[in-house]
Image (cartoon, rainbow, N blue to C red):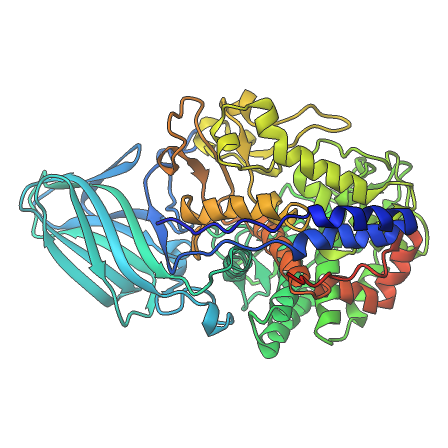
Length: 628
């Protein structure tokens, strides 16, 4: 199924206007240049149906593990009764071990032990408005081979309750099974059962997909709604926390920065009309209660990651840190969400004022924080970049002082894309220069241009170049089984002050693209970003229930088709946050609105006082309404 591509309106007619504005007022140039790119982009049209991949059996076991435990939805999978599961590359063979029944189960949402359902009649979280919801209409199964005339029963269950089942006689050869579904709501598991069966009966499955309706025609809107939906699905209202990734159970490994990020993304969803006011307030208040009242602190800082003990206490995860930057991300996200929704911000501001900033202030920058036993980390946020800017504003707001910054001018440490754009998801970019003299407008335009052209300049015959894919940013590798566990997370980047380019070639043999950066940079390169996400939705596996953490084509790929794509299905909450906030900011500007988090910063005296110390805002940085 192909997407109808509509050519973007040319920007050449704006060139002379921009030149004059640059000569008159640099800050006006900054405002107009970014937003004109947003206003004059016309999106492609998405199809009314999309595929949701349950499993294609391509990921292989992590090094040291006997099997790969997860399916493509972020749930897990396993054997039913006395069977042997033999995973190949792109298939699983289910073999009966004795004269009885047996098969395989797939959890459709989070680990099976949680029994968390998906509502097939509205697959996104219930807070998302009906007009953006998708429904599951079909189940599709590709079978490679089987015991001739064996009986296969396929079931959809909600824990122990049977929602739907269908029995098929297997041919022994290749079969493509497709079943229409209707009137199915909460569903936790998909089961495949051979029954009746004798020892040695088997079936080999290549792929399992669901067909989902898609009411969203706009690519950027789908990017936001589906990213936000997957992030919100990682939230547990009972705890007020966001799990680090979808395949972790709630309470096992919670991400504090993503929890505050969800609050911010919820304010954005409210601005865009994706959720209503009551639901937005309920989510943000629940997060506020947990972060301000229940999460432990050391010298005022929250941990990067927490877990919930059997006695329901929230504690820091062993061998992780009390993090200054993750605290700053979480607290700014929460504070701006509260401001945007008209909630009291006093407790959040008091929390920031209570941080021991004097102890965190080092010679070169703000310390990264403390170990779990309270030892201050000697590393600091001392290099030009969005992370340093984000925490420096919080420091300035709380202390009324300018923080130290040893390397205040471009480039960033390693050229990782999210560092270029992260701060401007929460704050308006300064112009013309910040306190230290950095020209963020010029830097960001040069950085995004380098990102968009990197693969074609360095690997012109690569599939990522041919397909117009881009984005070197921090994330997990596309093939976690190919590297040691300690190498799965990589700070991919185009190179910076202290690092050469890290593009995946030396590690994996082929260049890697990390999609969240393209969403973050969409206001600066909307045509390239939208083109990439058209491909991700139409040809690649981004859907209402599937995410792409990273992707690559093997060096020996011949056709550059989606069949050769290698991708990591991680629904990681932090990168989903970046993805959602990036598209949300783009959509607000495209609609001629000020991004809600920018407006919240302007309306909050605590944050604006800090901003005024380290950067001058483009006060006329208002969206340009498309007149085409």
